[in-house]
Length: 375
Image 1 (cartoon, rainbow, N blue to C red):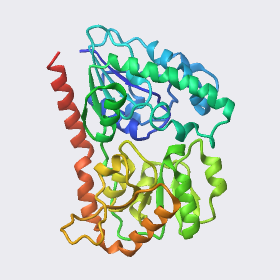
Image 2 (image 1 turned 90 degrees about the horizontal axis):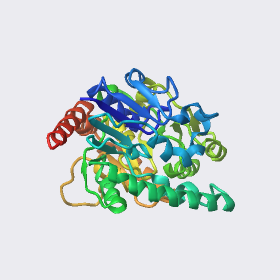
Image 3 (image 1 turned 90 degrees about the vertical axis):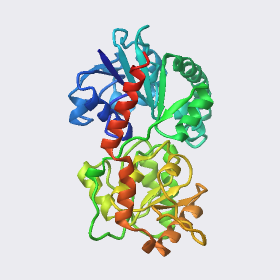
Image 4 (image 1 turned 180 degrees about the horizontal axis):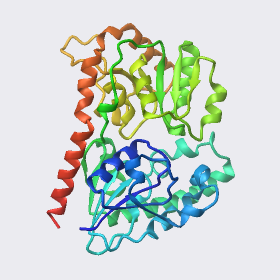
């Protein structure tokens, strides 16, 4: 059986690439198709695959400016030839699921999210604060085209597997398709509990507008508490300009450095609405609680602290705030600090083990085999 894996692009090891890595292990002889590949940016497992790229690969300034080529993404993904493959598995948050399969191919799409920037998070990406009025006019025309293409392209998929109930609902809303739910993995083995925590909070995130890191920075400017931020992205210059000296930016760091910060932090701060959210699970696997905006994928993984409830409560793994405002986050941090003794590091880690990597690997393998059996 000839197998093709399809991923949007390869520029770093984030949540989607962690999922892709598992598929590469399941299908080590597969060919991996992607729009473009920054060599050395992903794990040895992914780098070791037979990687085929689109015509975008040799475009200038691709590493830093790949977002500017967005209008070409549909044509680029359709230019990749996978017609001779029996099984096609796309891992997609953008256009990978729009690959054109052969008439006898089975196409399973593991959907990380429908394209955020053309659907429900359009204004978070292209609002008044981010682009000029003239630019917004051009973007509006482009997003209309991308929405139409995205809806049409979903007909090329035989089966949707969604990373969360949150994503499955959006697949239903935008594509009128049902999707099976299979949460992404967290590599619990790479996380550890520390004997002693330090006096800092932690953020691990790309610097994209919808991540709402500015809310966290403004909140901790007022709280005057130390925050360590691991990550980079297009918002970096603006975020650094509004941060006081108690906010420390480390850029992207190796896995072992990230793991050490997870284990030593007081809590992870998670101010954005995510489709699932692997970093909260990594924090919990390190025995550390999560202070998160209570919407999206975290509702499926984090057990919120409930104060004043006379009924029996399962052990908490985090604190939610329900408005994306500075004041709401400050209140959540103060609530956490007043109740730190209610969070048990070992129980947090046991909770995270439900999403451990070997469990995901076995479940996705069984899921694909069942769908192959229906061909």
